[in-house]
Amino acid sequence: FLNAFTYPDRTCYPVASQNLKDFYNLINVYLDSVLHPTLTPWTLKQEGWHYEVEDKKEPLTYKGVVFNEMKGVYSSPDAVHGRACQQALFPDNTYGVDSGGDPTVIPELTFDQFSGFHTKFYHPSNSRIYFYGDDNVAARLELLETYLEEFDALPEAPKESQVEWQKKRDTPWEIEQVYPAGADGKPLMTVNWLINDKTLEPQEELALDVLDDLLMGTPVAPLYKTLRESGLGESVLSDGLETVLQ
Image (cartoon, rainbow, N blue to C red; front, side):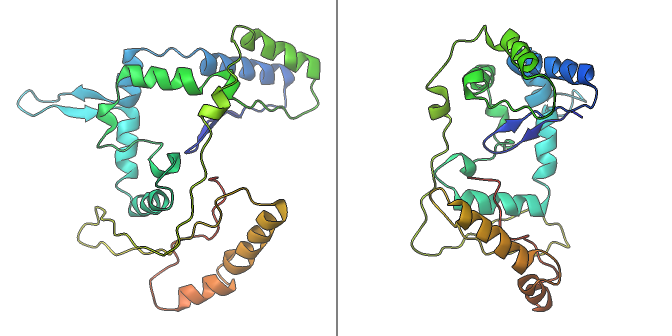
């Protein structure tokens, strides 16, 4: 198993195998790819954006792997709605911008910005490396040393990437967001709360998780069932407590 998961404030590169030799080969591939990527202007053009012309009589168009992906995301009503809610709740930190990239501004990204971001934030000093399994600990550390020994420690790196807590507001507010609905488009509505603006105690976080499961965990949970049968809408849009963000 190998994959990559992108979040608004981190990127995870998990690898796993029941074959120890295969496992270490995967680790080598991922460490080399993450710490020594081949970042060239062409990388940005292919993965980010570039001009393309299909007919010389037609105007230039934007193309790119991520650019096209995000165009698809921004054509989804649920995705547009969810992003608008998140950005309204977190206007003052990194959660208030789209980590995947807004297609309207992706073409403004330069290669210097692209490569500089990687150099600053994808440094080992800003990473957390976890192992799980019964392989030899010394072998793990020796493998990591072959990749990390060339880097100098940057004690300030974690501080520079720290996500500041979003302060809660004293009064409620509302926003309206349009999306490409088409002729059959329907309105979407959610009510959102920013629960905390400091670290929760373990007991508080556990209590919120249990309460969320009791109220919204299944279609027959009390709050979920009440909303579904209220006639306010055709279906329940949200799934309750969100703990992925800080």
